[in-house]
Amino acid sequence: MAFCTNCGSEMPEDAVFCSNCGKAVNDAPKENAATTIQPQAGEKNTALTGLVLGIVTIIVGPFAAAYVFTVFVSVMTGIAGIIVSAAALSRNKKAGQPIRMAIWGLILSIIGLVLTIYVFISMYL
Image 1 (cartoon, rainbow, N blue to C red):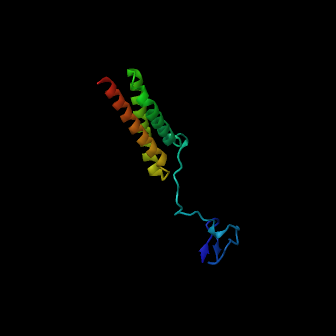
Image 2: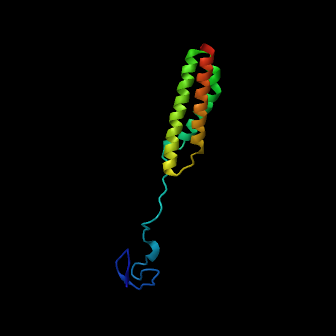
Image 3: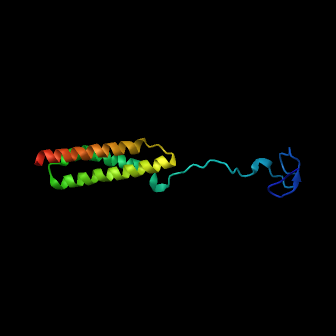
């Protein structure tokens, strides 16, 4: 004999509904249900932010090498792009989310940073 999970009354093994309360037998909560990790509100655009910082660094960085202050800003943008992209890569990997955009943000930030430093050094040294 089986018992209803809702009211506790006895019911036959092959019952589909409880004869006492009418609850369906397979409405019991699934204990092994897979849970997906959903990104929180601010986490969705982290990879996009890293990608945009990488693009800005790779486009603006080499041209900004003519002035010391703009090189500093471009280097800081590249470093920020690397940090944000690496954080997005780690978070997305753990959550099972796509990591392509974070990887491209990381690659472009590194390339932009290297180009900025190279152009700056070649102009002033």
